[in-house]
Length: 277
Image (cartoon, rainbow, N blue to C red; front, side, top):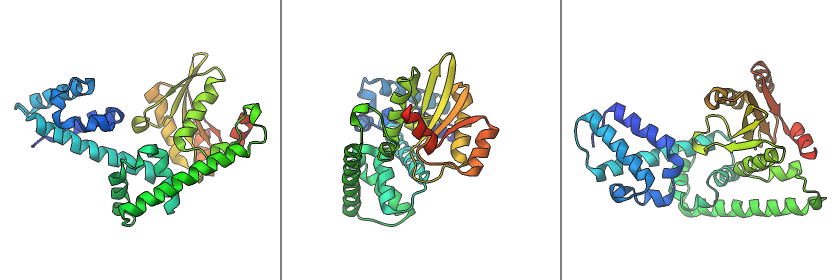
């Protein structure tokens, strides 16, 4: 199916904006017969098809349009997945597995083709069997680490979370923890879409001020990228304050850039103190 560059960009933009909803397996299985389905997202696809047809002055076969959407969805999904994994800057097999499990959660088995494509295209070829074995082993290891962390809590009745507990969390769990952390302190908290967060993971509102928060549950050192992203998010989300929170530490360059842009930084030590308050 021929599409102009303008229409291709239009479709990609649509997919980016609706990625999380389209990414569910139930939606993807219905794309082939999207025009016969009453779900809201397919009504939106119908409107998109009408715009494309108006731009091209011609009718488009619904099944071919559905197939094109599915192809672009798969490509967008891979690009987002690839960006997420590469931004972690990990190198070992186990750490790759940890980042993948953090991002995909329990859906990693359903996403095995996505994972295979990433590994074969960028690093080394691994069989499907060995990939799933690695992910299963690391998943089990993570669960054991979490249990061990709970058992090591010296005062479980206190309700306090130790910094070591955060080390065992995935990135998504860390964001959820921070959401609860700020809600208990009187903030209204909004989470952003993973696929379209624009440099912001949480938006805090209190006393008429809005704060854009980027959460980094990292092992390595946080560089300039995190600062640049949260600064860019201020205008996008119409926030007044920018805050980056990490369980790790920042490079000197990142600290200088944050100071120049009035970005508040919580490193490991600062976060540790906040947990005790």
